Length: 222
Image: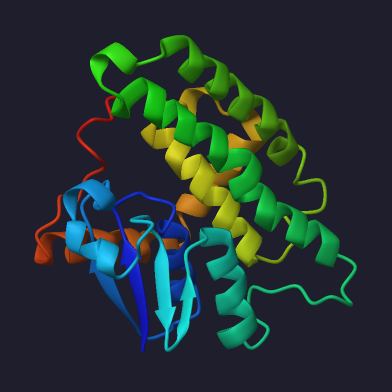
C-alpha cells in the first residue's frame, strides 16, 4: 500500500492526481498547513515537516516531481511516461523538472512574503517581483503547444500533471487573470480532466473526514 501525506492545494496534489491517473491503491493522510507547525507529530515521520511524503515500503520520497516520475516508472506500465529512446524524452524531462524548479519555486516566495510572514516581515515588493518572475517563465508554457494540446504533443504525460499544478497554485494566488493565453487555455482544459476533478473531490472528502480544513490556508487572500 502506498501512503501519501498531503495538505490541501499543496504541491503534493501532483502526487494525488498521479495516483488517480494510474488507478493505484493508496492511503491518503491529510495534514493542516504548514504541517511542521500545526502537526508536530508528523516530524517523527518526516523530519523536514514538508509535503509531499510518499511511502512505498522502505522507499521514501519528498519531492513532488520525483514522485510523479517514480510512480510512472515503477507502476505506470508505460502510461503517462516517455521512454529514453523516444524523441520526446528530453522535452518530457525538461517539463517535468521545470514544473517545480522554475514554475513553483517563485510562487512559494509570493506565498511567504505576501501571506505567511508576520505583518512586520511581509515584503510586498519581493512578492510582486517573484510574481512577475513566475509569469515571465510561463512564456515557455505558452509556447509549449506547438506540437499538440499537451506538453509532449498529443499525449498526456506526468509532465502535464506537474506543470498544471503550477497553474492551479497561480489561481489560488489570484494570478489566473494574468496567465498568458496559451497557458490559460491549457489550464481550462486540464480542469476538465475527470481524474483531476476526482482528485479534488477525494482531497476534500479526506480533509473533512480527517478533521482538516478542505480549503487552502486561511492566510491566503487573493
